[in-house]
Length: 373
Image 1 (tube, one colour):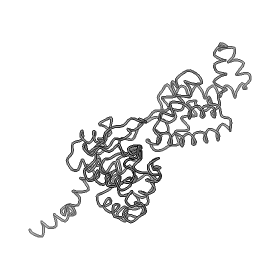
Image 2 (tube, rainbow, N blue to C red; image 1 turned 120 degrees about the vertical axis):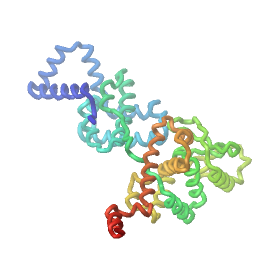
Image 3 (spheres, helix red, strand yellow; image 1 turned 135 degrees about the horizontal axis):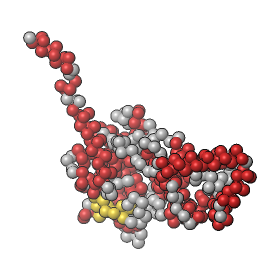
Image 4 (cartoon, rainbow, N blue to C red; image 1 turned 120 degrees about the horizontal axis):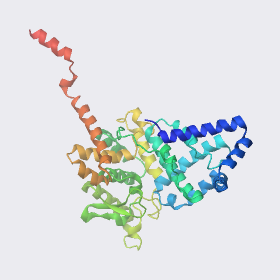
């Protein structure tokens, strides 16, 4: 699939032609002709466009409402992408790169062309859309126009989610009892597997978010700061979570801020655990687990999010319909839930191949028939 359409291809060709003309006739002669042909109002606009530094746009973006309204995890991801993009721009255009220089169709296409994986490219494109969209509105009072065509977003729908097998989960629960903070970490695993919530949602759970009578926990929805959604949780996971809360906060149940305390915290509930604390905990368990092959222990294979995938997959295996799973996962679109159907199909194929007769070859069957004859 091409990275951009015909309109953008023409824009790239035009830029390359103009660069060739500037080289052929010299920059001064070329600009003199441009000034003669283009009205002065356009030149003034272009002058403002040329004077905006990439560093100025970067500082503005991080202070903008566009960035501040993102979820914490998205902010961290976009800061990381910004560092990569700025480093690339400085390597190509110098320390004082102009926003104009790094927003041309040619430059952006070359930046994204080195990315092999479709999902990774789409994540970079999503960041650039957000950053450049905000910058264009603020500095030039315009949208990013044709640049959107370069920054297309398309996720790889054929990529299967990674989930833990039941044998692997059993081993993880055995291992987690042996480490530091075993009670807390055991509860974290059960909460993930009993509700299918995301990492950021688990970390921001507060004591008052647990409603035992409705078998629910209130979670801050993806990308919605301060907005809470109800999420069902299994009875066993709820009992374990309540037991942990009672153990952890038994002495402060009458405190005014009791219901606002974060369940999983290192400072008595004042602030939540950092994401890396949970990520490192599970990574260590995965590394120790003998039931998990080394190929699945590599980065970006099995991870904390695989616990959410496991929650959905085993609901499907238990016979729960896809629409109910969509509601339990709090997916906006059914297509987000349907990816588990492919993974479930792979599980069925693996299961049928374990049948004793599946190990026989056709040639063996014919040989057996000949012996009987």
